[in-house]
Length: 172
Length: 139
Image (cartoon, rainbow over all chains, first blue to last red; front, side, top):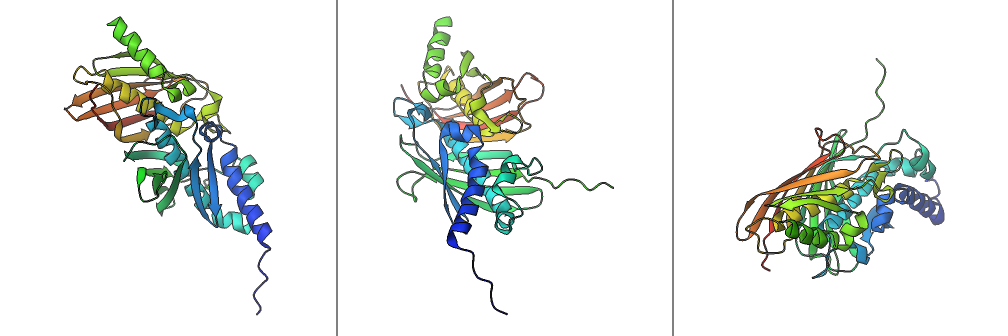
């Protein structure tokens, strides 16, 4: 049997970009920190767009440790949600509109988050990428790393545990 | 003592990111600090419920821990976070301010150890707790 024709590139891109925007754009705190996401296929990179209001130590100057933690956590949750939903986004079971409007679609909740501060965050853009160590039915473990000029010189890394959204309970 | 508190308050509240989040230092000294963050719609993490984002809770806890270290009698000056672990117990109630209390319970020449708790109006049920180690830096 002949393989079905691949979808046109623009259709694929539009669907994936719309779904990622739906996950990110509606969250006021992500906007407050001005974090954006760059997507290559199913791989996402968080970008912390630098602004003076992110400074925590004006003498150095350096990015606030809380901002670094928040940036890593946002990247972890978005990446985990994205990977969790990716198959459903691709199949059309979950649309960008549903991500915004459908209250039955829930997101992972942070249980704990541990940040390892390796060097001070310089006053410029930062990047982060998250790796899902394990996503079980109830819990997930995620590692995140953040860098600025040089990807091999991380300025922070973190590990977090998340409670996965539970499907609605069957009535017994 | 009041002068030291005023000075510390000015120092903390002059941090650009602490200003952006509206953090208010209400008590500091002897290795302890209390900081409050008023409810602010810009800090919402879940637009459906209005619950504050965990990252904003991390920031108030980190700031409060740093303030506690700097206020310790054995601390000569500044500090930076080495490691911080946050446990999230529950969602903060929308509309309520969040208050963090931090205590630097041990300090050496190089490292300060801190624990902190964040609560909303229901002070008996913590929203989050933190445990961290911080650098001890000279003047």
